[in-house]
Image (cartoon, rainbow, N blue to C red; front, side, top):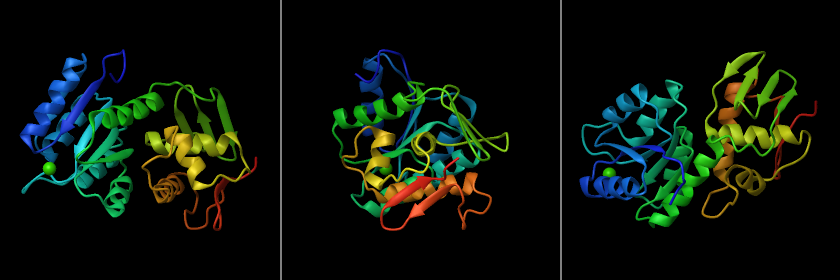
Length: 234
Ligand code: CA
């Protein structure tokens, strides 16, 4: 069981057998599930209805945009739905591509139901406002409100994905402190099992693109060569 509360799931999977199996198993737990067979329908549904989580297959068959394109399109539209990519290929390159596209996490097929549920729980925990550190952090031009889950740069709202938000929160909560990639993975997921630490570099780059004056010469999120990252001191 994922959660006591009813959650809204969108499942985008072209294989009808897996699609229906996912629907049945989540509906049995009392959740609301919408399924779509292709990428176009996923973008349309997610743009007109709220979902907590999108389970997004990478390979969606001929004629459909693939999962990466769907994810990129949703992020371009500033859709904050938590995205978990379902990838058939057991390759770190594919996983990184998914994170590049703005996904929060990925799971390699075939996966155990328990593993999928644990991934979903993790993204829900982060989106459900169970703030580790409530309150407002301000450093330089950046303000992070953990309760409202809101980030502003020069008082202009910035749209972050769940992973980006958690990463920024961890860094800003202890400015000047060096975090290695494993520690940052744990700050997002609670554990770092099965995850490629290089995924952190992708999230950091996205954060810099959204927050830094000049992402090539970061002044806020600093690289400590060979060690990790730290947020500048106030
Ligand atoms: Ca597929």
